Image (cartoon, rainbow, N blue to C red):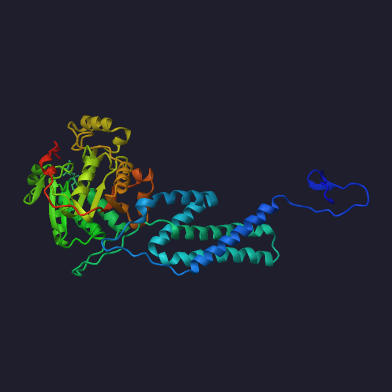
Length: 447
Ligand SMILES: C[S@@+](CC[C@H](N)C(=O)[O-])C[C@H]1O[C@@H](n2cnc3c(N)ncnc32)[C@H](O)[C@@H]1O
């Protein structure tokens, strides 16, 4: 009062009061301490909204994309965005927040154009209910009710999903010859069909591998035009993929250290190269596509094989690597799920039970390769300017579950097959035969 601070007192145990000095009195100014930061916050928020409106009104200058295959997918580099987004959703709305964010991500995959209307409609509904309640005489608690909170949470999740990085389908490329390309559709039905045929892999390998080959070539075709492409299939196995690649117009070369098995399986061995993925007997930069399916986990030095695959691919070419992570349901192959208790133990158990060693022997022909290890290599290769990560996907999952490949730890368990697509970067290399050709080694792989 008049420059003098009044003594605060409490009335009836809870009411705030101040003791006024006796006398004629003066002017009392009451100041609520949190009022100032509250108003500053409001002003800063208004400033930010104004900034967003100005930025939205500014004309966008589109980035010019260099010619070549479609560039970097966000998922490979920005997977971490999902973690803070999910944490934020859970902090804001608990399980409802998580469910709304997941729903918004699904909407983004099916109908991306619905996200903006959804965000606006939810926000409008929330504001409408809050303001309407006040106008009709409800108390302030009305605005904090479940309906308003849920509507605003839905709006926030729709905005977050729109801004989150995508692991969705890459843009389709047009074949130079305008050949009709059968689009790869990662539907739930496709996942179920693949899984059903996987169950007969042992009894009817022809059926399983033919279907897998057809699906795989179509999937790869979503990233690169295979027409007239020179393709190397590292660890091509019994050559089941050859005819599908050739149907797509590619010139196919299979490579595998276990040629004996090809003949046993009655596969065409002609044109198949005998060699190891860790020392490819192939000229540097001579391929358009270097492909590998279900091989990395059978190689003792997976990084060496990845290095080699990148080396033999021409700048601008595509490297497609797909493998079964150790902690995935099929990580232990025929020794699973006991491999989760230890690879050696699972191998011994198999021997005890069936009286013979498994085909995939732990630390001999089957190695514990994780998605994290693959991504460590990918980051190092990207930093070295050797590759660009084009996509990171769980190979057999339906499109709406593809985000799991972007989440560390989760992807180790929840992807049956972890797939990374790279584009080869770097200078054009000379076509001189590399001395690596002389370094071909043939590991003892008998499967
Ligand atoms: C499970 S099969 C995969 C066959 C085929 N790519 C597919 O997806 O159906 C694994 C293959 O990897 C091959 N392999 C094992 N070690 C290899 C190595 N060091 N380099 C290349 N291939 C290897 C095996 O001989 C076998 O054919």
